[in-house]
Image (cartoon, rainbow, N blue to C red; front, side, top):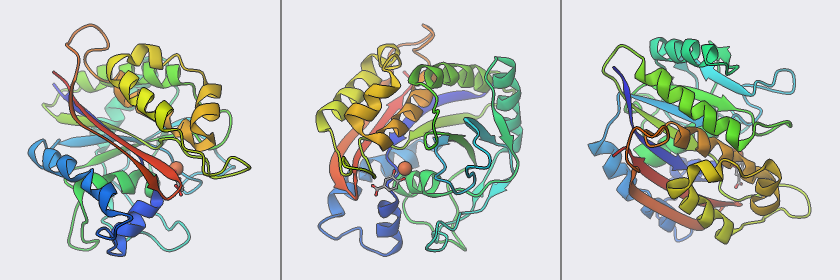
Length: 289
Ligand code: DHB
Ligand code: FE
């Protein structure tokens, strides 16, 4: 059977992708950000999954105000890298895993979660920046990401957005789905976006280090309690775009301690840094015990 071995959490700041693509990673502004991901790249090289289930949000790239799925699962064989206005990032296309994705869709929908099935979707910085941070630079023509990726898009852009608790419960259903797949695949689940940031209005530039670090503490040790945090607290404390953090609860809900079957996950890496563009960068790697 397939199993989820670990979860990875990381911000997706688009300027991080640009810094990599333009060769600026060693500049004083960016060097500390990338230094924080060096252990992660080593860890991923040593703990290479067969598939990454990557929870992210689309930024009006694949979807628009015409169609707004709350939860969308990519079931395609491959995904093109989106043109976000400055041209597509020079990174490899993303190879999917249609068989596992279809199985997860079947299982999760039959567990009463409403997913939109997407057979064609371009992926933006929400998905490619976490891959770049964790895997390092890849040549767009000759390079490749280390394994197939199942993109799972969550609407955190256009209201109404899903609650943290809904995301957490969905993560539990995703774990059951993965564990009922009849192939011995090692699956990692990644939760991305955040941490505190606000890009608009009078509070643009808002960062809340204290709240972010408490979020990291609770994600590790009190995920059920953290899942009860209401939407308004994210917006008030972490800024309007801080709501991206509910996606981390999907990955956390998929860890094996949640349903009482396993021990607390091991923290393999924790990193927090301000500033990166307008965003606080947060990052965590949790391995199932
Ligand atoms: C920034 C952060 C985001 O999450 C995003 O989607 C776009 C921009 C930023 O920090 O600039
Ligand atoms: Fe974003």
